[in-house]
Length: 185
Image (cartoon, rainbow, N blue to C red; front, side, top):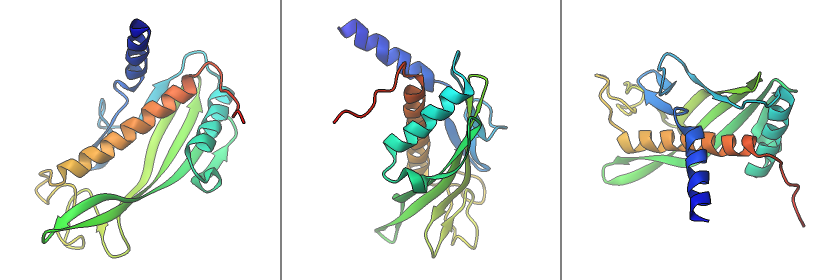
């Protein structure tokens, strides 16, 4: 039993390996190739239709209101999701924690046993203050990096990177399932 669990853990972790985002001064980039703003995950033997159908099922199972999260879809080609993480990051200011939302769009495209996972329109902040990748006067000096491109918000950077890594692992596991079981009453 332990060997089986160990094999499953190794198998699952191998899917996430190399499929990570990193926050740079230019935004979210593929950790393996920082020229790219997207990740590619392979699913050998899976058709566009299979991947698309499973992606829609994934959204239905993992989001409270999938109808509002699925922003756009082109059958067997792509699904675009809109996500809003409320009070996801915080900044300490004069001893108090101020929480900020994170909003983004994820476009998932399907092609020949692969998916292209791309985060677009990433925005952190609230109605009063937007937090850019690099601090500016408009952001009152707040940013993931200061104006000299030195990392300032290390824990929040890691939190966002971990969030996307977990999302990719979860999606990969779901898309790789042999068979998706219907909900049992």
